[in-house]
Image (cartoon, rainbow over all chains, first blue to last red; front, side, top):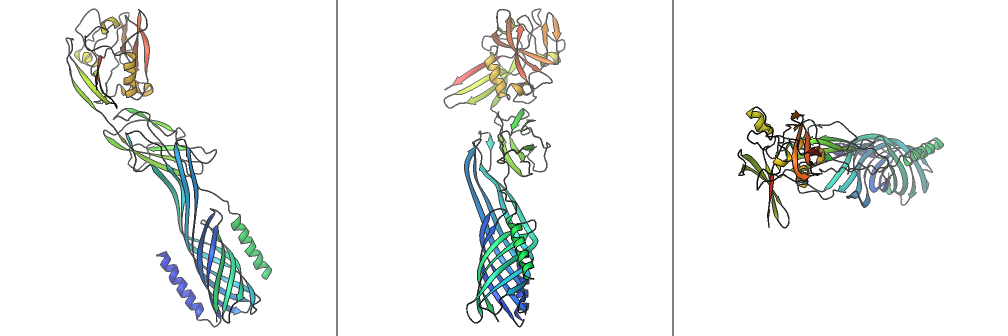
Length: 201
Length: 290
């Protein structure tokens, strides 16, 4: 349900900004790194900008990211075979940010932005996965593999700050290269490197 | 304006990059029982095989002894071994939670089966007062073994040579206390169990640390030993507190080994008694099938 609400908010936000006189619509794909858990992943972002002044815009966007990490252990301690640890992350995020543009109207421009983020995250952290040693006949188990995990799921708040370099590729099209950091309170933060295109009107 | 925005960006990036890195992990929970579980017998649940993958982590343990997943019958304790009376007549689950310093938990439930193959029947012997016997059957890869034990303390008719209790109820419960020379020659087929045979029985009953309790448990599959005490120099001693059961093994001409149990203790131990002392008797016999 939360995903649907976020999607609706995104559509309404985009529609509102689309109706403005000067603006742009961007799409970018990103490589995501979550330093706290050292997860890697990928995602995409859709954003829309409304220009208020040549050097100032308002941007709203939505992002979806996926990340994971596996630590192979494959060692035996006290007759217990430690298998591996796995980390999984998925997030839908919405942000709004003022954008300051340097070099507006030129072939290459630099944008700086920062603002609040609301995100719905689902994280599963394997705390352990191990195989128990053989047991006597009078002991029975559903499975010899014990799987211990921690699930961190819910809606969290944070902030985003980033910059992007935009290169004018055609009359109304720009190619963007960007980097941003998304800090999320009590959940998983990330650093993103992105490449994308935007359509300006 | 631009400078402050750049600083904000850099600060945010530094904050995120400096997030404490962690590889969340939890303790490895393992537990077992050193001996096979038997209904109402005391049993050690041993979680000492559990460990943490974090160096210096001190583990704590708590148990769901009735396996109902509704609560924990013990508090958190740093001792990985807990002694319980096995609650299941046939089978059931027991749960363990292990907690590390950082509060991470690992939970493990295991099922346990009891396997009892025994029969109780009348023992046909040379004695004037009959006793019941319990036959324990064991199967091995190449043979079957039936260990037969007297299910009652041996009773003898009144005589100056041994000690009989006054009431019939006491005689039925405690049997007759006899000197070793009498105990060793009671029957042609049934004999005094040797020390090693008593040792096998104590192993069957959870080992020396718990057999003293388990040998007394009022469960049908147990020997249900009692604590009549012993007679030394004509005096009945330790009645109701201790049970001494002769073994067939002599120490020397004047003394022999006996198994000692106490009403309040869990342990069973072998002690040396003067052969003239009077102690309780359980007889045994063994059959092998190939």
